[in-house]
Length: 152
Figure 1 (cartoon, rainbow, N blue to C red):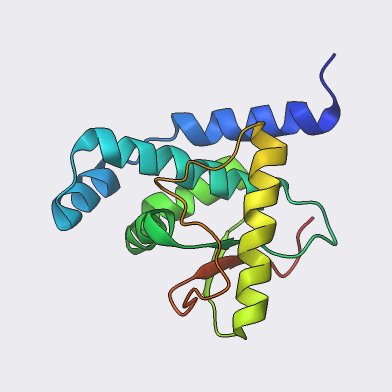
Figure 2: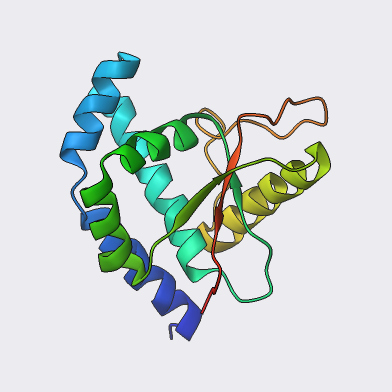
């Protein structure tokens, strides 16, 4: 029997996965000179990350993202209409992107929370070749997070 949380994750993830990002993906592939097979992996991980942001329980701190997933999110954001449509269709609200302007410790905490939640939600660790490992010495100046005023 599926729990309400499991059903919610599945429903949101399915909506996210079927949402077409073709123009975004083509631009991303061209700008970063990536084969479409790699771009599709990044797409999957971005949609998983955004699903995590959508289903995040109230009181749980925000999630952090970096690396290729963040780069694809930036590309998605500049395609404002498709991004807005994705947010409305999948989340029912706008998912804000916030560059990290906080202390290194806070950024580490958000990213560590993301990696823990990823494994808990999806039943497997985040792919190491896409999600950078969390190290204390990392420069987190290029990380981002999703921020919701009201996470209801």
